[in-house]
Image 1 (cartoon, rainbow, N blue to C red):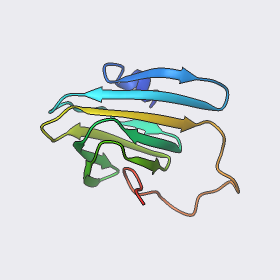
Image 2 (image 1 turned 90 degrees about the horizontal axis):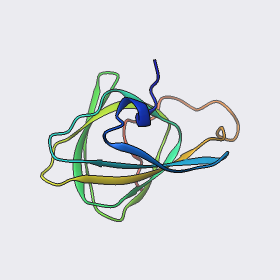
Image 3 (image 1 turned 120 degrees about the vertical axis):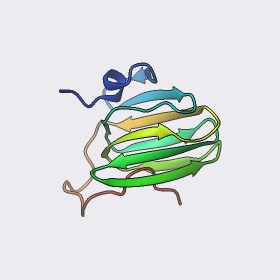
Length: 116
C-alpha cells in the first residue's frame, strides 16, 4: 500500500516538478474535502491561499489556520486532512528526497507544519 499523496489523493495532489533531489506537489481542494491517510517526507510548504484544516495523525488532531503567502517547514509525517474552512486550500509542497543530516530524528514530529 502506497502512502504517496499523488496516488492516495490524486484528485487533490498534482506533481508539478520532479528531479533526483526534490519533488514539488500542488494541492488544491474545496471546503469539506477530506484526504485519506498519506505521508510526506521533510518538505517546505508554501500556502497560495488562506485556509483552515483539521489534521489527524495517530490519534492526534490539530486544527490549523494558515494565511496566504506563508512559507513553513513540514517535518516528515503521516496524516489525513479535512478542509474545515469556507475557502479552497491551495498549497505547494517542495518535498526533499535526501535524508536529514545526521540520520535519525530526535523524536516524533508534531502533525502539520512548523511555522516560525
